[in-house]
Length: 360
Image 1 (spheres, rainbow, N blue to C red):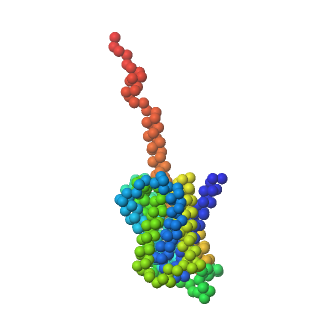
Image 2 (image 1 turned 90 degrees about the horizontal axis):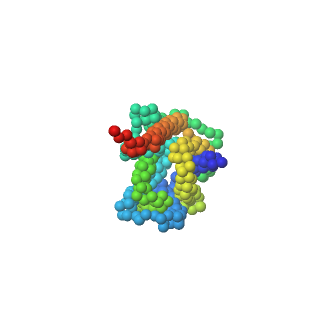
Image 3 (image 1 turned 90 degrees about the vertical axis):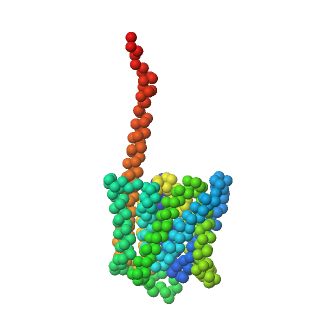
């Protein structure tokens, strides 16, 4: 029964992320400013998480020093504010399918950054180490394929945009090769900022272990940072209005559902089955997004995006396979060392228990 709940939770998580890509793209397609969208999204997440953090962790939270606060500020600036703003601009240039495809690069980028920061080791003389290097190369080839090879377009029978005006339903936007390549670069840059956030957050958690309060504080600081960026780039009051439309829906969904529900579900899945199990389910987001974006947003899928997505997923699984095999090897070595220590008896104790006979 627990295994069924885990699989259902994983499917729900990836479905929520597919909805994130779809609603974000839909909001941008109807003209919402990307920087304003990020501000509203972070504000909604802060309002949702703040009461929970105060209720559950306020009394047990460690004191927040000025140095730790500065680290959290820079962490939110790099991993949340910059990542989301760059992602929004890249999504305008590309598609929801591409956003879902490049997300499969995240574990690989995170691993590569962890190696640079010497938090991970690559054993080149072992098969798992070589497989991980091959996975990184395959991911790079997948990203290059998506960026520079378009190929023929795959059209579906049902082809319309759910949120656009009826007069715009048949106007399909196909970005130029230069614009598409720029969008791919921005998506990879966004994932790099996100991966850097994942790597550096581990160090911050050691000095400030209150996870929920730390997440809320980062969302609050990101709200302030995003507001400064948005107000400096867009001062038209009309652009700041949400209304009862897809803009409000996308902000509420991304701020509350994505930040709130997936935070709890991902923590529960990682606690039960570990991070590798969750990472291996990431290609489901790509599948859900491809189908939904074609049916609901009228996106035209290129053959190059399909081939590149397959390479990205293949590279992801290579890195995860190598990582899991190295983990098993390390666990086996640790178990053997502990067993040898447990059954070995020190020499002094042997001599004290069985003393040599004295000479007569």
